[in-house]
Image 1 (cartoon, rainbow over the protein chains, first blue to last red):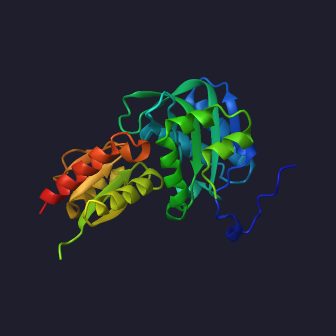
Image 2 (spheres, each protein chain N blue to C red):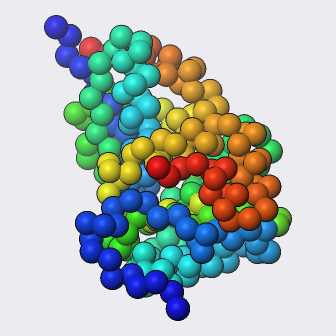
Image 3 (cartoon, rainbow over the protein chains, first blue to last red):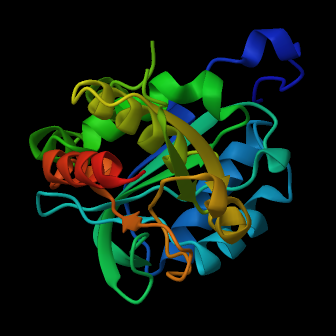
Length: 164
Length: 97
């Protein structure tokens, strides 16, 4: 049985990133496949509404989230409007082979992405510290490599070091 | 007292990347001696809001005919070219009225 999602709202302001929200070496052939699988995990944990997944896919079509980084591993940070989120959480997949996301700054450009971080955010200003840590993480190619090579979900969560 | 410069920070939904970008601009410009006020918005809101700002910094495409300078960059997320972009923003804001 999974845990109940009926926490009180005061208790769930912290960003959730649990082992059940991490997928390692996922075999996927498209960005959509990765987003659907990660969103299903968030939904199963009661962290997002059923509308979340389509909202993310729609947003990705109009405002893509592929980020080409300085190293040879690139990331994407798909997300959706706050109304689809029940409690802030991250779901993360490392991919056996890269899938194509479009570049956030230039949607014409394709970015081969190896790490997908699906963000369910409900109050960005209260999550600024996590977002800044995330940006700092992107800026260090050796840490991105370390996260990509994690052998267990615990190891990935430790390596990405986004939570207090 | 000089007025703080006003920077409009845009991204797709104004919830994630613009939050990081706005904070990085405030800190980076403060370090360059330029006080700034930022406001976050969705890319689609930029045309309606631009007239009240000195500069737009965006992670996602916005119209170019806004009447104020636009910088489109991922530097505050990826770190690539961050100092150069901050210098460029500082230069634009120093020149703006």
